[in-house]
Length: 63
Image (cartoon, helix red, strand yellow):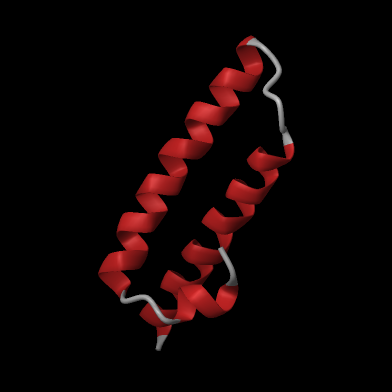
């Protein structure tokens, strides 16, 4: 998810997306631990999206 897309979402939408991405990330990590997944770069992409959303939420709280 791009930063420009994240900025256009409301705080509630960001919270929902964050919980959804965290679940997906955990599922992918577990699947990859059991047997290698086809595209392991998905894990990196989702982890970075989680960080982007968490950063945006923190930034909005501090304002």
